Length: 297
Image (cartoon, rainbow, N blue to C red; front, side, top):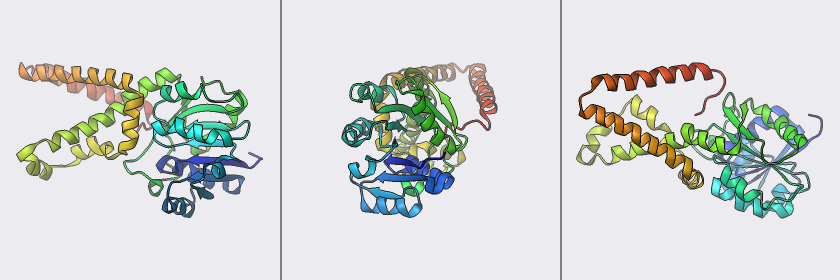
């Protein structure tokens, strides 16, 4: 990469901050990163940690010289943010994002983007239960799945320019069309988060047994509910923007649990054994296949 590149990060939190950290680590002065932050505290911290070179709450200042704009706010804030920054973008600017749902965003952006501003949808399948730039890590993307959606009309040179930057994260990149992305993200990310929150809610409704149940908490509960500590704003937006796929999968999950209930009620040990045996075998084979390729959280 010979020419210095200007990158703007909108939302310098866990994902945006981690991108800034890895790119500054790999490129140093060959990249200049500006960041849009809401508070003075977050601006100071983003600069202090080295996630950005400069931070500001002013949209124009942050994006006006940017070659690439990385959008990392909650999903429902992405389209309004693009509307806000559009008047200040230079021709040829590339928009990409970390949104967990894609169809909702593209449905809106394709109606407002001028022909000389390009959108290449992205979704890094990584995260932590902590949020904010203080939780950012330069290796957050390493060996994790990172979906790139190419069916948004951006020219090949824009795609190559963006990937020249993103590949420095050492993520495992894959391409999907928009509809398939949203369906797959629901199965492997969205519904598991909802289910983890449901398990915590189940515990919380234990009534007079709650205190005794809490004393028994060990690795199983911690492992299966870890992602329930994720950001509520982000997950509320995901449910509002990928509702069809999520509800379809939740109904399938409901059906599976119903089958388990029925088998237990009729005392069918073999059916329950087969349920656990099949899921163990499938999980083991999946993990073996994806080992050292990506970790979907």
